[in-house]
Picture 1: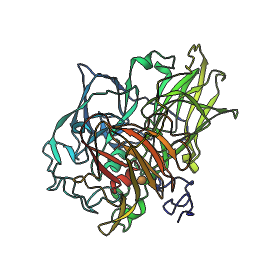
Picture 2 (picture 1 turned 120 degrees about the vertical axis):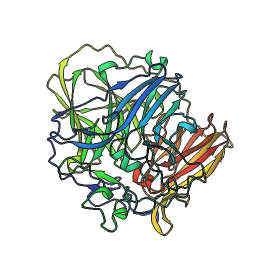
Picture 3 (picture 1 turned 30 degrees about the vertical axis):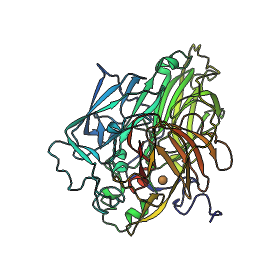
Picture 4 (picture 1 turned 90 degrees about the horizontal axis):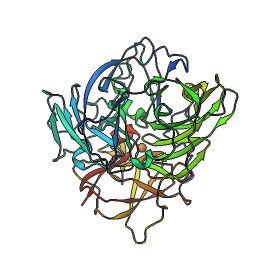
Length: 513
Ligand code: C2O
Ligand code: CU
C-alpha cells in the first residue's frame, strides 16, 4: 500500500535508499581512487554535413594493465564526442562491423522516426543472419538478464553493413548522447560500450559568458564490474552466473557495478586551474543513481551552479549543494575553483553509493589563472511551466507485470510491443503526461522535450528544472509534465531508462499523427 518503504522490495540489501538494482562485484584488481588521469573522448565535427562512425569490437584499457573487450563506436569508450550546431542537419553514417545487430538512438534529439533508432530497426553486420522474427527473442536465448517474448513487428527492418542516421538538430544547444537501443539488448550493449556524447552548440549560447575550451568538461558517469582478466561482467554472459536459475529475476531490478567510471576511467583525477569550469554531467549508467557533491581537501563544500538541463540552458542559473541524477539525465553545471590554492583537491562524491561507489572522481588545482567569465543572470528564454487549459491528460503507469507468465516490467499493464503503439498523439498539440509508479523509474520520452509541472502534490523538484527528456519518478509520487508535439510524424518511444527495466519490456510506442 501507500505506506510501503521508499526503497521498495526491489532495492537489494546494502544499497542506499533510492538505489534499486543488484551489485555485480569485480574480481579484477582495482586501482586506487584518483590514480588515473581523466580522459576526454576525441571530438568529431561534421565535414560536408557528414560524420562516419564504425561500430566495432575493440580491446580497451580501462583498468590499468588489463584489456577489456568492448563494443565501441570507432574503437573508443566513450565513443567520440560529436559536436554539431543547431539547425545544421548532420548525417551520421554508422557502419556495423560488430558481430551483433544494433540500433542507434540520439538521446534528446528531435529526430524524425526514420532515424530515431526504433528497437527493431536494426543495423546488422554484413552477412549476419537475421533472426526469423526480428526482435523476437525468447527468454533465456538472449544475453540480457532477461529478455521478453516480443511480438513480431511488421514494420521491423534490418539493414546490413551501414546506414545513415539523419539529424535535423532543430533544437537549442545542449548535451545529448547517443547509445544503442536494440530491442531486448540495450542494457548489455550499452554496458559493453555503445555510448557517446553529442553536443549541440548555437549562437545564443556562444554569445554568453560561460567557461569554454579546456574549461568545459563532458563527464560521462557509468558504473561497471570487471572479471579478473579485465573482461566486463554482465549477468547472463557471465560464466559464473550463466545457467544459474533465477539470474534474470535477480537482476531484473537493474545491474549495478562496483567501479565508477568517468569518461571510461575508474575514479579519475582531472588537473584543473583555479578557475570556473563547466561540467556537462551525464549519467550513462544502466541502473545506478548518483547524488553528486563536491568537497575540497580542506573540507569546504563547493556548490554546483546549474545552468542547463537535458534540453538546453535554464532561464537562470540555480545553485545546488548536490545533484541527484538518474540514468539518462544530464546536468550542465558550473563549478568555481577560483579561490582555491594550487595543490587543493576537490572530491566528487556520490551520496547514494556504498563503499567504493561513494567516490566518483577528483579535481586537482595545478595553478592560479585568470578568469573573466561572469555567469549571466539570465541564460535563455524558458517559458514558465504552467498547465495548459483543457489539455489532454495521458497517464502512464510504470510497474511490474507478469509478462506471458514470466515476471517483467510494463507500462499501463502491457509489456513493450513494437507492433502496437499505446497512444496516438496529434502533431501540434500540447498534452499533459502523468507518470506514476510504485518503485523508482527514470522515465524518458523520445522526440519532444517536456517541462515538469508537478511532483506529487508540489511543484517541480530541484532536479526538474528546465527542458527535460528524462525525469526520475519516485514511488507513489506522480509527476506531471507538459509536452508539446510539434513535428515529425511517426512512431516514437516512452520507456524507463533503467536499461534492465527497458530490456524487460518497460517501454511503449506512441504514434504522432
Ligand atoms: Cu537514452 Cu530511448 O533512450
Ligand atoms: Cu524502471
